[in-house]
Image (cartoon, rainbow, N blue to C red; front, side, top):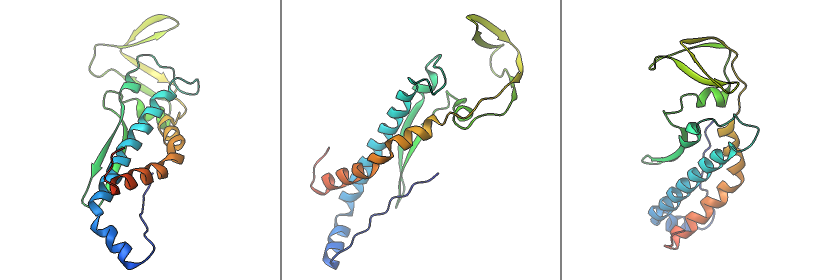
Length: 164
């Protein structure tokens, strides 16, 4: 899912030329907006784990590994919201998983708590899978109404030479 943003300038040619001359300021405002939007979405996702609609938090590892970064190209600025490498189970929680076998990889055994007791095993032959929780998508959708105003605020501030 890729969202794009386009700046459309309507008006006199001199207004358009004036904006072209201030492209560095517009780009700075867009960069600031991307950074703030990324932090806001990541924060909203992290807070969502406090609700009963999402998987139970056991270690907090997934929540700690959710973050954002901004990548700049010659003509693009992209905000990436991610669940880090220390939480490889983020993808099956986000999108769901079919029944599958779980094998140990780096440790001597798998470990989890079941019924208040520690369980150790070399493999789980019939993990039932899980439904998708869409915690990352939900965080984006909850923040979506604020995105356009964030861009407007940051670009206008940059054009005025202010920081927000």
